[in-house]
Image (cartoon, rainbow, N blue to C red; front, side, top):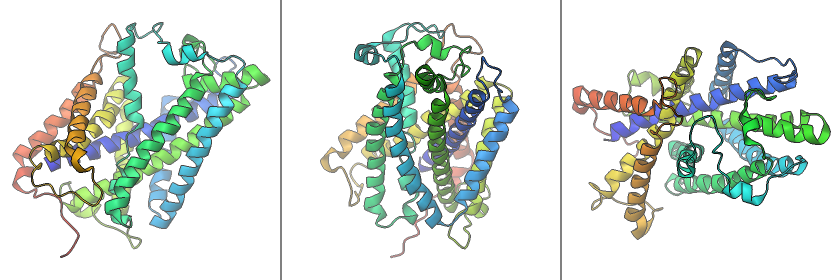
Length: 402
């Protein structure tokens, strides 16, 4: 079962890197469009091939940065944390402040966009689908766990890093969302492909807020630049997490060519695993050239696949290992089992929710292929276990002596 969790985790992490860096490539596409005149002013819209090229360039830069010594990664990580915190506060204050029209508190906290092209008009259904973005945003908090071999006092600092990441994301993310939504009044116009940003809603919010106030959307483009840099660092950290997971996975002999991906350079960086992660993430984006439906099915593994990987060890902790599990210095005490079951049941719930249709009527192009993608991955993992892995996989290899 550890092998199943590992495989869901590594594939899910590659999908996360793909989705993060591809979304950054799309944002750069929109920034170029707005900077050259906008959708209605003759602006330049990069083709899907150019978007893939931008995506590849981003991944290349992330691989180069992650090939540097850990001291450099630490510096970039600290800079990214500072940028994200300051950037969010700038955006959550500046955007609603410059907007000439602001939404009321009633609109922000009670309005549901039932006037949509997705054919979904139920308030409850819209709320449940909205959970997907929240769950996606909170992904990756396990990065601290993947960096524990390079962390001092990892048995305490690792869990603290995880909890801190979740807590900060909730508070700061909530503030950012409030700041943006108070600057929104006409939702259909933000989603219209005929607006200046070509239907890219958040870009249209920023651009329109500054243009309505100053007659120019340059300030909005600058705000998008702040977001782009934040996403860039997110992708960088994602590659870091991917490479450490691939390194650990191959150390246990659980990957093809494990001896290759397990190698480290003179700076103790798993250099081959870094470039493998970047290459796989590039390959996972290639389906977007043929079909966005296929690409969306691919990256859907990012959310559900990772949460399944999170839930599996928790499930076995509260069932098979309940009596003989030895907690570490940082633990949840008597509430551990209860919270473990809450976590498992929550993952089961969101797995069902994220498999529901997101557009109606359901056709070949609007079908939610998430169950197909995740189910296919599960079948591959289970088949590999039955046919081969159960005969040789012995579990994680410890690098501690004594």
